[in-house]
Length: 419
Image (cartoon, rainbow, N blue to C red; front, side, top):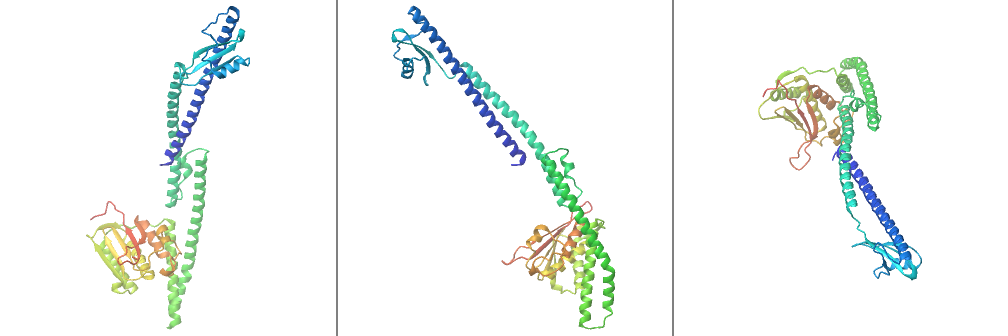
């Protein structure tokens, strides 16, 4: 049950309970007032009957002397010198009134007393109908009010999801409208958080871009100088570390371009299955990989898609290199329609990466090796530019052991996509 239903149910239950208590109180008060009126009427009649008997020795109003049916409690009160009334219980309730007269006799009057006469029945019916109508009206008003509150809270939640998806310019205060209640305070706090987050991300983006740009020139010079060193093991180590540093700077620059939002896809029609096969072949040559270290499979017919081939190749290269570096060969690349899957036979991705996605400078589990965490981050950036979906998970087990890491790239359908 949603918030709207819960609030409506709470309002309905509280109002129904309050109306029930009020109706019971009104009905009880009416019964008490009716009993008081009946007692007063009986007391007036017994006084008049006593005066008539003391004067004329004639009882009136049906009064009786020493009635054997007189309740003992009433008789005892009269013998103590009191004029009293007494109501017997149901069924066949009676209202008695008695008083002592001359010669030590007890004069009494008896009359019927029903707890529900026509007036009480009418009052009871009016209370029931009024209570039901009031509860229905309160239910309608509560549903309307709860719906308005629920709608505003849903608007705040929708804005929060937009912010989580990267739209830091989304405003929760505008979504909920004007007001000075708690929902407006929540929306304002969310906008403040988004503004702070936007400032932090912008500062991080500028820092990454500035550092990468400032390091590019000296690292290029360092790489050139390393190539001039005389042959030998120390020179090879220097050249290797210089290349690693250069790749790191290039990766940082690429991430900075993603953060700036200036990257755009250069679309072209590509036969996905054939292109993946050729891209993996080029990667084998560039990385000097063994032919059986990366296996390409295609299920179903080759599908022609409208995409950016350079970015697809970059995504595949990063996924395969990550799988070879942190997993175990062979790496299986499967193409099915618009979906490309890359699976290794290692220990799999860490749960944190599967749940939250890759994060820069986070290498993951120790058993998957060390790294800067930039390769998968760059792959996700290229997929976002393409409008594709890149997810990470665990491959299904085939022999009872772990199935390894699974990266799945799903290209978006488009008007230019051909089968």
